[in-house]
Image (cartoon, rainbow, N blue to C red; front, top):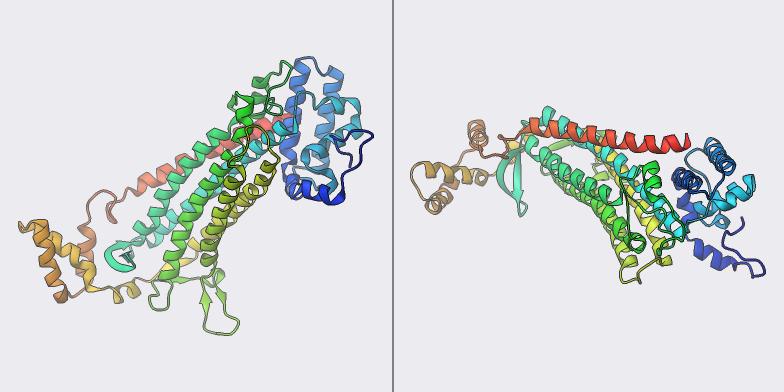
Length: 451
């Protein structure tokens, strides 16, 4: 495939250099085809408005872009010789419609092309990830309903601390998840700014209508300074990955809890065979090792963030080829978090807690704090009550009545038996509706351009 930047009379690119220059763009850029079509369509309409393209040329470009979408769909396969999705589309257009295809790059650089396409991809993926994540949080809410009253020991320093229940444990991840959704909204707002028309980072000597392309592509605003557009690349990607890591980090904590609860020495929970694996040598084994992979891949996600931050740190202002290397870790991050969300949801839906096993393993000390607070009711100062309770631990005889009394006494807001579960349910519905509406509105913008 011809290089869009190649000049006549110069040597062709050395094959080894070509392969190294392209990197993994030819592998990952195919999934950006729909966004490249959309960006190019919006740019062509704007060029038509300012008189760079005639009505005939504009019509020719529009028909060919729609034809390519019908032929290939949203994804397309690339070869190393294609370089990237931008060169591939430009070559396809030129080979089909000639000079009109050559004019389409007017007022654009591949620098603002790639940022525009990546922002459209990022917006779409953030909105889709949020919706999948909400489904996972809703599965946790379902677990609260079905298993929520069953007790569990709460741990500090890996030692039994105070009683909790499954509802309290599971809803802690809903609470954290609602925070993660706020972070998704915040980073979405950052990338929801139009970089198209910033050129190579120094503006363009044409009166481009950047507000027009922002509206056509579903951006809420224009990112003003052309150099700031270039300097945002890497920073925005790292922030996105950090938000995805926050989701993974909560899953990692959940994974450690479930692996602990599933130990033979505890057996607080049982896992369906659909989510466990066996041993190649030990016939008795059923392992919840998928959650070990969740922990490990949380570290993998962190490595993607570190890679993007390391690549983008300390560069000169403006475009640097280094930034090409941020695309792969970003895309891998989205792939990883979506796979993990769906896997964790499956795990949540296939576990049950064994309250009898929990009761058999409760320590006497787990009721000590309750005794201390009982002493407060007798007029003791807390430190005196604390000491008195410490001396009474040996005489404790755990039974159902003591368990019930302990749980009923936790009346402060946010305690195991004082949770606003209706509030969580309403919040999840609100967030679901927000992300569905925002996603549909965004998709409709691109659909009007292409489909």
